[in-house]
Length: 85
Image (cartoon, rainbow, N blue to C red; front, side, top):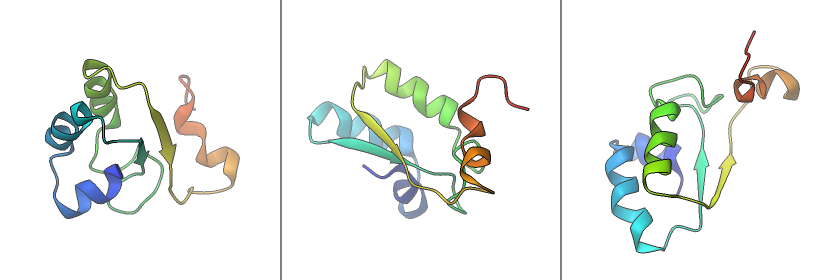
């Protein structure tokens, strides 16, 4: 389930997760910042909120990232660090 495209096409990612994850038909999730497909910590989707919904739904599958990093690979992964800066 591509959350970037879900938000671009339909919006309301939380409702879609609640609808489709319980079906067991979601093999993995894919994330990126919306609308510019950048790091997931930028843009209109609050992935902190989305990850909270995933915990609530007890999602245990894979989450893949498909985005264009702002700079080199190391800079593009800084969003994963708990101590950004």
